[in-house]
Structure formats: C-alpha cells, structure tokens
Figure (cartoon, rainbow, N blue to C red):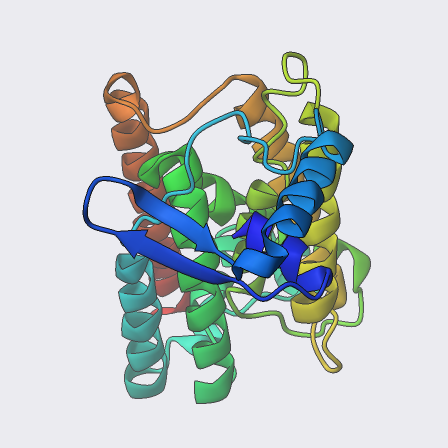
Length: 277
C-alpha cells in the first residue's frame, strides 16, 4: 500500500494484486515503468529509513466494556421513578441543601435529569466513555471513580454557586469518565521514549472533547469542569498504580462495585427518609 502511493505520486500506474500460488501480495506496473518504479521505491526506503511511521503504544489494548449498558439502564430506571413517583424534589442538589448537611444529594442528583433530551445526551456519551474507561481500568473500579467524580462535581458546583440554583444530571460523571480516559497513557511515561508524547496527546484529545461536550450553552460548566479534573486526577493515580483489568484485579473490581452499589442505595434511602411524611 505504501509503495503504491509512492508510485502514484510519481505518476506511475500500479495495481495491487494477490496471488493464490504462494507468492502473496504484489505490486504490478507496466514493463516500461519498471526501472523508474524500482528507483522511486528505493529512494523512498532510503529517505524513510528509521522513521517510525507506526509505533505500538505501550500499555493495554483498547477494550470496550459493555457493562456500561447497565449504567444506562439505571439512568432510565431513575428517570422513570422521577417522572412516575416524583423523585426529583427528593434528590436534586442546591447550595441550601449543602449547608443543611444533606450530603446524599451530591449522589442522588446524578440520577435525575431535566427532560428526555438531557437523559438521552448523558446516556449516549456516558455509554461510550464509561465503556472505554471500564475496559481500561476495570468495570467496578472505573464505575466507582467516575461516580465519585460526578459527586465531587456536584459538591464543587454547589460550593461555588451560592444562588441556590438546582443541580441535576449525570454529566459530571460522564466528564469524570472522559478525564479517566484522557490520562490512560500516563503509566508508561517513565519507560517508553514516546510516553510523554502519548500522554500529552491523550490529555489534548480529552480537552478538545471536553470543549465539545462540556461547554455547551446553558449547561453547568463548573460541574463539567470539576468532574473532568477529578477524573484526570483519579486516572493519573490509577495509571501510576498500573491498574488494569486482569485476573488478579477482580477482587478490587468487586469491592469497587459493591462500594458503588452502597453509594447508590444509601443516598437514595436517606433522601426518601428525609423527604417522607
């Protein structure tokens, strides 16, 4: 393929052919162009000798964890409970709730959404970003890290906004997953010659995605930024610890999954208890 592009740039017509007689792939040119084609390929190989066109990125392969579908199902379930049974006033977050010590709203607000469009946006992007981060760090660990980033985003937002605006939505958690992915190349930095390049490239890509997804007009930019930064910090710590899915890490992922479950059930239990008759 590379050689055919070289010859095409020199105006030499080529055909890529595969032979079943054991010769494999070959590049065919007209007999009159044969010597020119050989010379062009020879010069191309000399000029690009030692140039790393393709480099294997150190670290685990890119994996997608379909467990993020379960998270999407939870979002849909809570949206149903919100619209059917009035869960929204019980779990929404505000500065007044923070000062009153209702810490559980940092978590419950994640599961509430303003409307169906808000839910769909977070579900789609969260499904993709959480699936990738789960594949990188492990299902339970990544889910817990992103969830804590979302709760931290709600806390920081309510500390900054003192006008009692109400916060809700899983976007802080989604931005936390994006932050986890942005620094996924951090762990090989000390060993690989190009590790710094991969790290900077990953962070730059994460920032560009954050600008695209997290700075939309009418959104809570502070919560988005806070979730993204907390996700970066969490991802850096996990990457330095070289955490990745493996047979040895299943206990850690199970414990993280249990912690996530507790942090879903307990805050909502407290919210229902506090809002009950």
